[in-house]
Image (cartoon, rainbow, N blue to C red):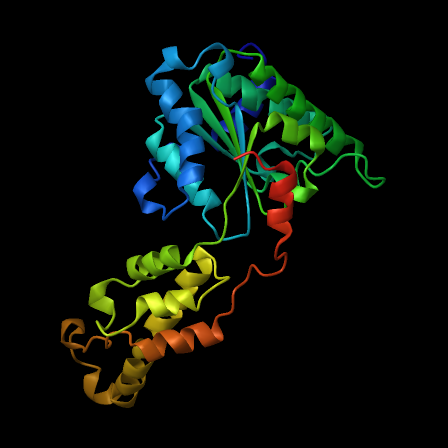
Length: 307
């Protein structure tokens, strides 16, 4: 690869997606999802720490698919992998390996896996993998797309027959659109579900610390009523609730702009704490965004899941 200027240029494209800085996301920052964290630890952390235990039939998984509704923490889990596992981390999206030039997409895929083997132990994270690995055979599918998919499948097959410590982590919101051959190569397929009531309560407490919220707010009661909300939805709810006291303060400041204009920033009043009324109003105007597919994830898990 080093002898070819063309491949060296493609390698430079892939190296831009190597994570150089620490994302600083620890396992304990991720609420619940113990089963998902267990699979990732068995695939990455434990084999690196005790390699003599993971040989032969107990060789670690080479590929894991995280699927589930959007906003449930799949990308956050990938950041935790990059933080906790001390491996070279390739953060790959469709723009990383899809090229408009004929033949370059397949070469980019091959260079990606060559670099991953060179820097082993390494992790390749492919976010929204359905955008590049949808089912083959559609009449309108471009020839270049088929070749790129075939090359990715061939390279993943090579990983399974290779001793190099290269791990593929993929995430998708639409697992039913993936090619069947890819599912065989992603040995573990784990559902990342919507948060439970206790998890929602913990997320609300973490996002709205005690200094920002009144003590009388019934967080557990609000969490019970927030069934169907993802973690991202709850962050938006907290942001909207925190904005309500700020809006009241801004109206006051705007009315007194002439008098307060020359005051120092340190002298300005702070917004009041978030009340339960603010949170209920925020829930009323922030609807869950992941109800579109309903039970389809559970049906797919029953047929293809392997957690």
